[in-house]
Image (cartoon, rainbow, N blue to C red; front, side):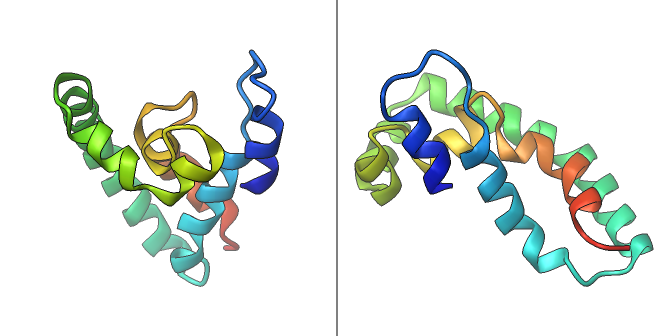
Length: 110
């Protein structure tokens, strides 16, 4: 994650993915030792539920000022001069909540 933020520090115009993958790997840790059938069930449930959660949250972020309050208190946002964890989860180029159901089963061993 630190490498991703270091690469975006000079205001690059390309989408840098290491910070997103760093958080994706961290979200994969709790499911790392699960069996394949359990992973398939979690991935299916995530694929069905997370897009709706993502849409509702993103719409709420765009309409309200709560996001600014959250970003103001986010230490990752202070350090990296970005939207911090909010960007990694919802508003960035590769939001983790969108990619997690697809990528987490492939990251964990079968």
